[in-house]
Length: 489
View 1 (cartoon, rainbow, N blue to C red):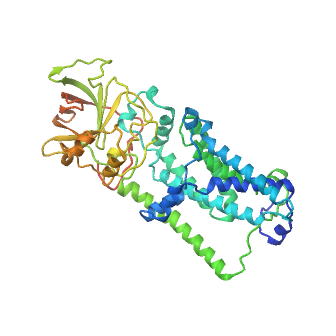
View 2 (cartoon, rainbow, N blue to C red; view 1 turned 30 degrees about the vertical axis):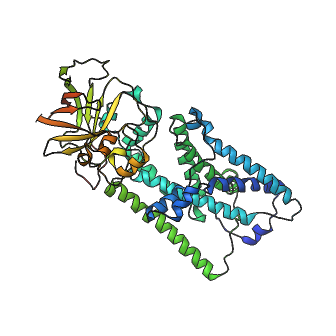
């Protein structure tokens, strides 16, 4: 005989159920705790909601929520370890204190249960997971969260990578897997928008986000708190279903569960509910999804640069000769001045390596419109590589360059991120250009695989460098970058 699992709602039966004392106490704690965890407490978040720059910014702010914690600990554990969960413990402490006061004040009240509050708390948690997960999913469905490794990264020694960068680049190489993860997250978020599919959505969310969370703990990815956050919320949603799931699948009993739902007696309320739900689905799945597609394929507001580099120059180069102030420097692996190798990416990034330490950026890169602000290429690894953004004057065979490793001020970032290019030629030899550290090199291309660079470096020393391309084939396959609709490389 087949066992049928049906979920029905029966309000009168739910209303007649009296909760035990300990269940009321636990609920009071859970109510305060999850409200603190879900409702944004950051004033800047509300400023973005009240006065958004665009519909996309409004939807992105709602979907992303507020990730700011109560407190941050400046330590390795506070960034990657378990001390980074300190805001959870603080929220739990506040919830314990408030729920204790609530219990004292309610000791003489004849409150049978908190079914109504429990229902609406679950609604708030459901929608918080759904919005956040859909936003999480779209940056994977259009693979911008973990871009494919650049040529310079493919030629970086294994031991020079931070653990998280290795993990992120493995996922970036397996971009079809990244796309699948994005689809799975969007699907789980969509299921959580509907009461009848909440259990399935919560199970998928808990499984997928647990995998992301523990991987980030293992690889020091610093996304473990936000991933674990969705696991925690999903487990809270599953609490209601666990007894019936246990009876159905383990004990193999027939199950006819009763879950409280509000009785919408007025027709205009029922119609309003359908309209609001439909509007949410249209805005956060279709409209927001289109905005994400547009940013990836049409705008180039990504972690990965998009402006085309020097035509037909992409590749790994050996340094055949290097002259500094007219003096030829022979190769020396310990030299901190002479270049050891160089890379021209398909986009406008020139990378060179010297035996010199650089500050290591431990961020995971932030999407930007302007290529010079995109840092994903050099985050999470050492190795003495300097990344130069450049713009080309093909008439004068000149490159105008700027060091991407430098720290830009807030005003400089605001100035630069208004368009894709910087306009280095126009800014060169101006007060703004000097502040940005723009320098100018001539280039020659005597043959297909040779590039000769000459000019003044950042220290105002004269350099003359001959680069010869190394022919290499990569096992990562032909699709080593994702196409966009902006440029042809």
